[in-house]
Length: 360
Ligand SMILES: *Cc1c(COP(=O)(O)O)cnc(C)c1O
Image 1 (cartoon, protein in one colour):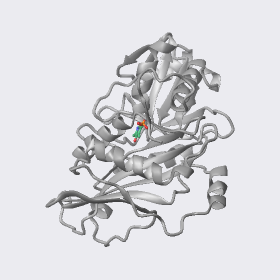
Image 2 (spheres, helix red, strand yellow; image 1 turned 135 degrees about the horizontal axis):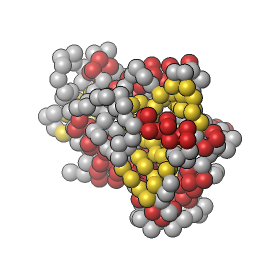
Image 3 (cartoon, helix red, strand yellow; image 1 turned 180 degrees about the vertical axis):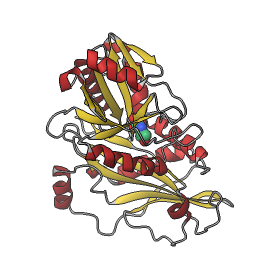
Image 4 (cartoon, helix red, strand yellow; image 1 turned 90 degrees about the vertical axis):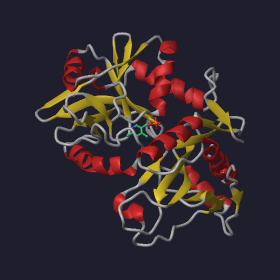
């Protein structure tokens, strides 16, 4: 039975003036819309209790399993308002399928693709006025699934909550695209062979935060993690995939089981040829990256993900050595790929791949 997400309207939603004040400078992840989607799964009865309800806190028993054993997975996608006022999602089925794959790894139940999409469409419909119009702004959607059973025994939970919240997001680079600096973690990895690296789960992020602090302590914006087996190959950043340009090749680390398969990463593989580049998925040694950036054979490096789309990387830092990429400037291919993705998402370029889904 497909889930219905009937709306229980918020009794006192924000006024137009309050909402406009938020939308004038939304930032990222700070403000939330008036409603959220919820559904509950139990081992006995499966999915039920689905609705769009007023946004607000959960009441959680202190023994709620997720607080102890981190049985949780999430997604991230955006709703875009096109110039004619219509609202669109970018490849949302990929997010639905990835939530299923992540959930399977964390021994959580499967939320069917159709129910995922229904929940998002119903939430965006209820909070339509919160989808920004301006430039690169969008409504960021955060679906997540967590063990909500109050039980301290170690096993997969018999009660699980699905929720999707929505947060207006401004342009990621408000002052124009700025290359970031990357600390190469020597000590920490985010994912090990056989672990949860390919799942989008909160635990991977928890494991990345100390390395991120170390990066900041070295004056860097983000951290690059090496593979967990040999600490020798490029895996990814804490929450973004990595690409490099060498000659006419656009190279990204092949999926090894510890790299998260980004929707943005996949889309760029498809777009590469249209932009005159040959897409390549293979292992990349950190040493190759550093030497290539230093001697210019690697001309550009960038990170990609839904939140920031494409972020140029200007330098890599490891103990005793800093190597800049493309003189610390954003590369031309990097900016062209970024622009192409934004043009498709924001409805300025023809959607030849059928990636956009109109929801309003
Ligand atoms: C979400 C995420 C990405 C990017 O995925 P997109 O689908 O492109 O947003 C990359 N790496 C990690 C670890 C992630 O969690």
